[in-house]
Length: 157
Figure 1 (cartoon, rainbow, N blue to C red):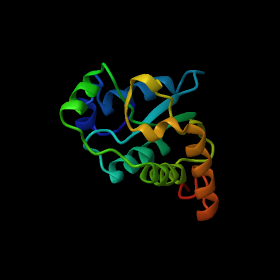
Figure 2 (cartoon, rainbow, N blue to C red):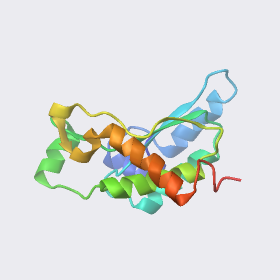
Figure 3 (cartoon, one colour):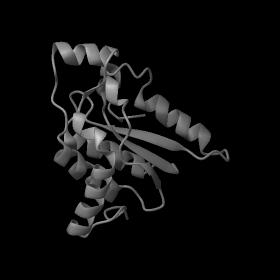
């Protein structure tokens, strides 16, 4: 899914709307299939508020797992070509850690978090380069959550 915002979906050429995604969820919930959803942060034009809206929307759906990603701009892709011509703002490492923690606070504890950051192919990654330090990012998310005395599902009642 990446985002609940249809303008973003159109911008990234996702190929389906949020309403179509919800229709699929509705049809899948009566099966024995486990539903996992991808949430992508730092999509072009999205604000931190929109990223949090996506997490809040997922919190109310009958899903089993979420994979949280930072957008990777890759060499040889349409977005990579666009980014080289006209770079757009992306989350800093610190902003990413903050938004992930805030998203986790919104997601029910019962939802399995399968990923907190992705792996871009080092040689093809145009931006952001800080994503290459995956273990450090994961450790820093954990440290920051402890420092804030927070947890997954904190604001989900």
